[in-house]
Length: 492
Length: 125
Image (cartoon, rainbow over all chains, first blue to last red; front, side, top):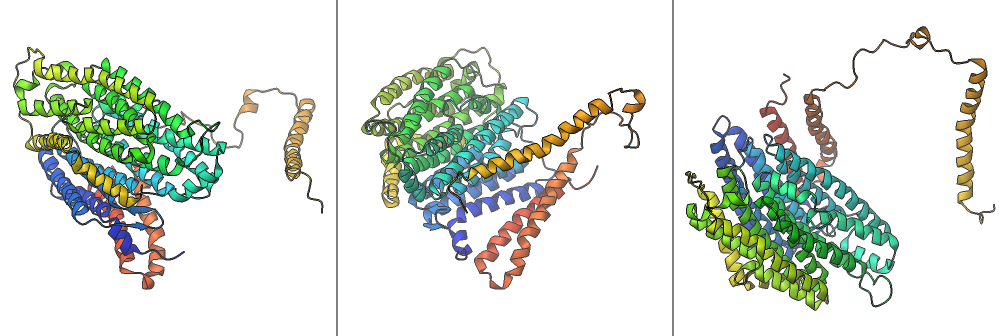
């Protein structure tokens, strides 16, 4: 084995290294400068260091991307992964900005922001891994950071509950996934994705490969909150501190879906049909069932929710179902899927931001607490309108085009029944998104108490996200062209 | 030597042999005990006789979490040593990139230690 070129490694992993060092700097700044100051000052201090780090990392990735492969797929930087990494860093940046809000009084802001950055680093490594071991390591690194983030508010029993539930479900599904990956290694004799694909195609209908597939689907199904591995999602989205929940709902989903698609489409894509020649491959059947159940259960359960964060959780489950359609469409659906998850992440972080404003001022996130929000913060209410309509998939916004492209890819790939189901359930979803907007715009409330103004960073972040969702909706080519070019260069 | 019989047969024979070796003495001892020493337990007989002290209280006591935190911080030094030794041995032939990489790694560990120190974890209360 040849010796490792560390300089090359540092070059390829420069953004990750930079963000890690920024995380360490956030810790140091909070310890040295912030010691003894008021909690508000410490949040602003460490938060601005973290936000600056994110901005620089995103800028560096965008302007000076370095492409290459390290150690046979351990770390792959190509236009596609760089694009995903930029979007991950931007989502983390928005999450950091949201944490400036006083929704959850953070006892240790330095640690909180550092963990947000570390979670982002984990997701970035996850995105650029084409080696199953590295996938697992990065997934664990991300998960460990997210477990702590979910349980970060030590004063709140809900946050602790969220952390423990997330941790228990996460560790068990990680164990299943590791077992699955080890079986893949057993069948194919390799952990590198291209060789795994060749090995699986050779293995044919080896029952061991099928068991491995189911176990891997379990692990990723947990990360993306697809039914039947979704049980943690409502409690975590409701109980965790809002920025943590926003990152779990957006960034973690973007990275996990990207890797899930990569592992399934590249690794298992060449697998032959199940029984008989006309049937679909097993992974198509498996993911098809997961998608269908996610869409039905997510959308129907969201209808009856009172808590808006729970509603967002079930909507996330439903969206996981739509996104699975993108994976089902194979290489054809890869571009639409990437577009969908990125725009979905943007709208979700925005929606969580608005919820955090309401929760900080009323103490809860019930639907009725949103009544009169329009009178108090008309601009932010309009932002929420954009996020909700984008999640529902109304034409001029990004969510519509995401759904449109994914559904179109699904039809092209021949899953017509799932397409019809997706259309029907997304009509249902309009009801609960409009329910929130109804409360905001025409809800009656007797409460006329004064609400303190929203921190400037939170308003700026929300406006930027609303602008982004609208812009990507009006000009989807801005992102889609980049994805298409990146896909062509990468060779999908 | 004949090898065409099932290769697992030998394993089976070994397993049965191992089981018998373990179970037969126990069974014989049990049989012998039944005839030679009928069970007649009493306070004197059940006492801990020259086998340690009478236990007091419950074994389920609470530990201070500081023990665990100490153990975790010990890992900083432990891992540091494990990686520093090969680093020092091959120092002469290392590239600049490798040097930077190990420095970043050391920074991670050192900052962890400094962080714990500043948080007051190291002072035993």
